[in-house]
Amino acid sequence: MNLTRTATTFAPPVMEARRWLEGVTFTPERPLINVSQAAPVDPPPEAMRRAMADFTMSQDAAHLYGPVLGNSDLRAELAAQISAHYDANVVAEQVAITSGCNQAFAAAISAITGEEDEVILPTPWYFNHKMWLDMAGVSAVPLATGPDLLPDPDAARALITDRTRAIALVTPNNPGGVEYPAALVRAFLDLARETGIRLIVDETYRDFDSRSGAPHDLFQQPGWDDTLIHLYSFSKAYRLTGHRVGAIATSPALLAEIEKFLDTVAICPGQIGQFAALWGMQNLSQWLAGERDEILDRRAAITEGMPALEAKGWELLGLGAYFAYFRHPFDIPSDELARRLVPEAGILLLPGTMFVPDGDARGAREVRVAFANLDRAGIETLFRRLENLSF
Image (cartoon, rainbow, N blue to C red; front, side, top):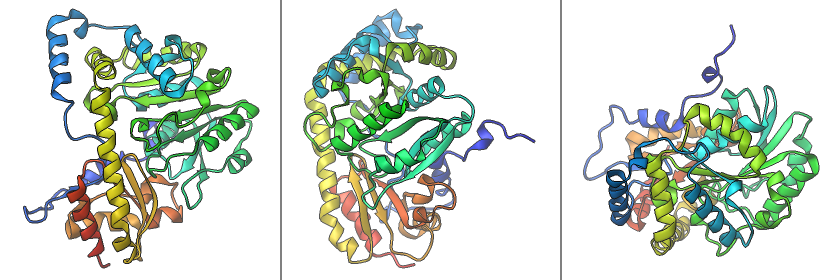
């Protein structure tokens, strides 16, 4: 019997991890440290919430359908900000708004692939990318990264076949945290152009990149939109996870194909979320800079705390934006370790087995920590619990 579309892939990892909490009691002396998911736990700033409330009460459009590819004012503002950030010339017609960045990826894949086509994903990969490829009938071709978690364009070249339609990169990376060097991202664009495939670059965590200025020059390349599919999310920058607002930048011709997918799935992005994203870009640049500074300080706290963990055999493989990616020192697989950490250490994190193909031995030694919701004191407590582990 043939598998259904959803039966071709695994259960949502974050939801699976949450089920590990069932029946476990946490005390005030040792509360749960939840570093399983990369999502803000606080609502948007009060000024934004008040503006959103006023919009919902005063504008009938807040409750109606809008354009499938997103509202024109938000598309224009995002195009202008991409242009400014990357020193490029991006226009509104090259931008579409989606119901979250996961939908942006799904829409792009649907527009460029057919049954049994292939997309190359560096491993460890973002599991929702793998899940969508599975359900779309597209083969995810794993591209193993090096010890620094960076993918090799020459290794990717060796994987390209006549069924390859794209290479998908995430930078700053989820799950690894690493920021891909500009020259590396450019090398992948050149490879994609040379071989006639698309390059998908997911920059959901762009606003928390430690580098100042443009992280790459892809938008500066003539005809960039014939190869590049750029994905972005407003969720992390403006704490709009519950409103599901993402974006795609690529050619108008491809957006016309993507529009077919979006129209049949959500019809249009939510109006309140789009309003909030626009309001945020126009009013919260200083606030967002402060949010970035705070994340970079928490990243620094990870670095400062590593000597004590290294003394216990832990190794930091990648660090950046919301994530730290570790190799653990224990002689048990990471999925077993992650489950045991809940009752034995009060820690919920995700095992490396969730980010690699089945049977990949590397994942059994690795874990992901989404540290963005921990302050310095929380990071210190997390490290202290990890230091005291013995399995």
